[in-house]
Amino acid sequence: MTLRLDLLRHGETELGGGLRGSLDDALTEHGWAQMRAAVQAQGPWDRVLSSPLQRCARFAEELGARLGVPVHLEADLQELHFGAWEGRSAAALMETDAEGLGLFWSDPYAFTPPEGEPVTQFAARVLAAVQRLHRAYAGQRVLLVSHGGVMRLLLARARGLPREQLLNVEVAHGALFALRVEADAVLHEEA
Image (cartoon, rainbow, N blue to C red; front, side):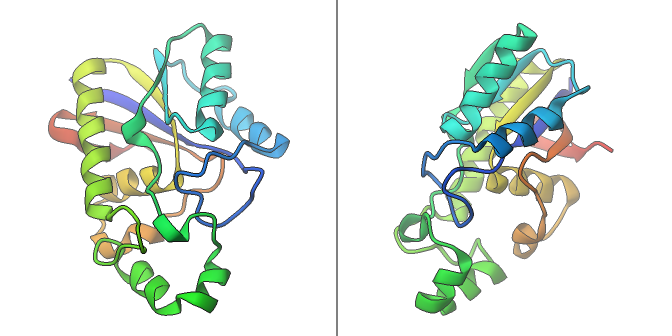
């Protein structure tokens, strides 16, 4: 059986750009508007799942209450932890760690930011979570409110991209994508 998994990225956050990772900043009013606009005339969903970070969870709770569907927080679907790079912009990193940033951009699986989570571990935790979701919710349509890194990983896998192209997948704030999840976390992007 198939799980229909719609992916919604959180909107703009109060502390702005840069690598947010595990930082728990709130949405701006514009961020709320981005997310509300993305789900308008979409669904219906059987449930809403979310990263526990407030930039995702607060919207998921609001939407679940409005739709009258259950909301569950999924810690394994949090963003990649960027370690010492958290909260820093690419421009700032170019001044202090241009070599590391270049290595990360060219192959994020091969270079881990200082004190950060290796992308191989991040991918393993996200894909294990998706397998659990498939087992629990196959036959349903579920909305996952999550992060750019989680969505890039799942979309790159669904598109069959090589690992070096992970960061080439574009996922704007408030972007909504649809996946079909088969057994063993086999992913297909829906049009």
